Image 1 (cartoon, rainbow, N blue to C red):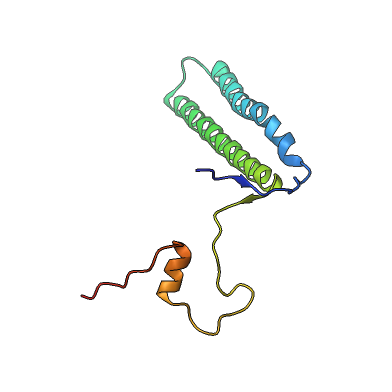
Image 2: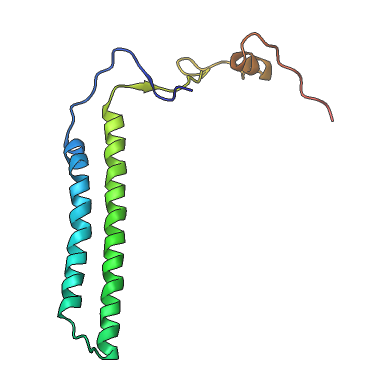
Length: 134
């Protein structure tokens, strides 16, 4: 199945911020992960090894906060990456899906379409079977 069937003679839009941002995402991910980890490492290095329970609790809280910051950062990077891909596809050449005929697109019909006409349009060359009577 060919999901992305190109429309002939369509032009691509000029690329913009999405490509430069797309190329920087690995660096943004790396820096956004390393900086909180380095800060946490510094906090652990400067902490007293014979810490009281209150200080140990504070260090554990710092661990959780940094973990949350990193996971939040990763989710934002993934969200921005998905947005970049969507913009790239939208700015690319035109694509067409399977056509869907609309009977009233240019001129409204005077009468409603019958079930048989609709079935013939969906499956050309076949005749519609009447609904079974129950």
